[in-house]
Image 1 (cartoon, rainbow, N blue to C red):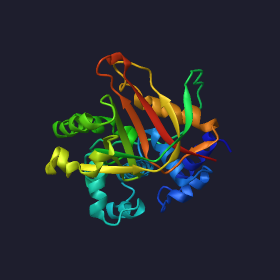
Image 2 (tube, rainbow, N blue to C red):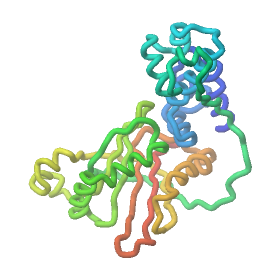
Image 3 (cartoon, rainbow, N blue to C red):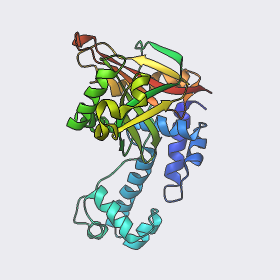
Image 4 (cartoon, rainbow, N blue to C red):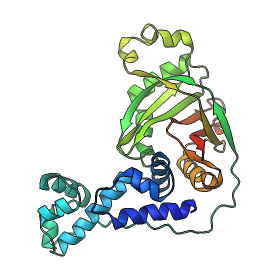
Length: 298
């Protein structure tokens, strides 16, 4: 079974059991891939997490069923996996913008979240230079924040975090002691259905890592985190050099997964995802990003 058939098979399994208890391991098994690989590929290609897809589909179906007057609110809550009518009503309001009771009246608009279907179209024919590299273990120093949802769908949030005044001040201080003023790292860790941790980081010399407080003060030091990234195999792909090097970089991530990964003999593995950012302060059109996606052989 190829990766397209596997993904569709997993989606069909979800839809056939949408009102049942769904486990990631069972879903991934239908695609003949590991749970982590399936979850990451799904979120990269779709732009939202597997959990968001299931939740949105259930609330969409619940709204349609309530509007037809064929089910009570309490029964809809149980059918679509909610522990109580209150938790169902809260989720329903967030998704549809109205209460379940208003949906039953048939006088309000509802939102529809459609079923996924994999349609194969003729794409590709483009060159993409890549490397499969063994990266040594490394330590990074940075400032971070937890975000909900999938990394692919939260770029605006992480960007706002990076340009926030407090973050910029700490990043400026870190740049002063980093090994290269123009280089920073966006590190994504602890990726799960509930969200991910994002860290804006640099590589710092040992003397700074040993005592950050002495160099940037207690208040700023408390905001910093040290990330020790173990050695791992990565596929690395570099964007075009441009003033607007960040503009299309999320599409580049999707291209790696949709164009290179399926026939590569590798799958994504549970390790930090790293974006190396080279922002050239002297020659702005020489700036670029390089993705490091963690992989392992099938």
